[in-house]
Length: 479
View 1: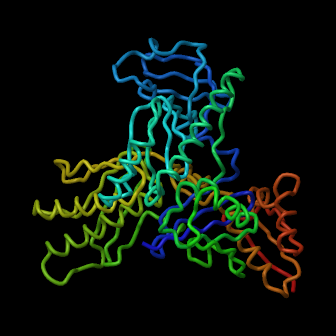
View 2: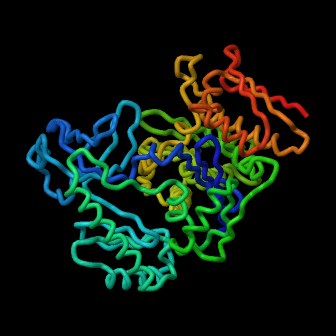
View 3: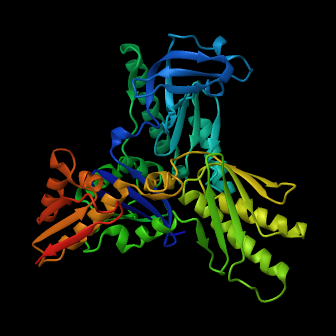
């Protein structure tokens, strides 16, 4: 599998696309490193205990209190009410497992995990695991033997995908750094009173290099010098292969546009997904679950109906796995494949789906066909849905539909500005847009506007126009 990592930056946002075999497989976006809380470790204080919900609220020093389920208290294998395990006013070290969403606070756990380049360290645990992305049985066996040697009392270990092919000394160095980090966190906890932030995870660029880049990553392409310099500076620390090419893109067309990733993102927000055969999927996302309907569409097959249905369903199963990963869909998922009478055909489709999902780092579980002939499965809610990143409820239809968010529109507009500014005869650029988009383009104290002017060397004028639709920006230039 050929993999590229594409990193772009506009308006204090960092955008990352993971491209596999020429197709966008995953997308990440982060406004700035302070906006992210997942992975952070806090010394919190129990604010309230709710025995009826089996949960407690934890004061973290954030806008909203964290939410701690009894199941997320470590070592709790015996069912006991949460009010016997934690008390109001108690100080407790927790890690954020899920970002705040809507009116809900962050979900926190006491089972701490510290990711390194090759290992994940789990203090006060006694487990040993190997990434399921490593499928070679000999390599899994070798890493298990190394893991048994590396493991120290009181620490659990997971050997990550990047550990494949590396020796004991390299892995031991990673383990020792993580143990030292944990000791530093504990020392911070002893010195500070709750609520307090004890550890802030790295920014998106660093996490991508640490968590995503592996031996099969052939190229990292970036469009900003500061990102290029940062990657070069941490390459040796993270032991990224010198065979992985790092390129600073300086083309006239915006990087995501040049590689077709903007178009891929737009398609990933649509309900209908066309298959190569002419069939298609319809993906509906609700609060409770996600439903996916499979249709033959334009595909009529070449032989009998059963073969046409089987081929369409198998192709759909592969595409569904890709869409779940790209759209960051989690929770309960119901799939309505085209009806199959043959039990052997059903098994083939389930096997195809399970195999395709194995390429996804996020855990999923296929439960099989229900009595209604629907496939039921679950996928862990690991990241914010792509639709929530790129879109916002439409103000014109009472929230029944969705339109692009102001940040997404502003970034897209900035990309167009930078592309236009690269034309040598362009002297100045004028943008008329919706006031909320203009506010993002200009930034606080005009910081974004000043940055664009500095980076492009061109005069840029942003005009707020009340009658302009949110998604429409009129760009003109003087030559």
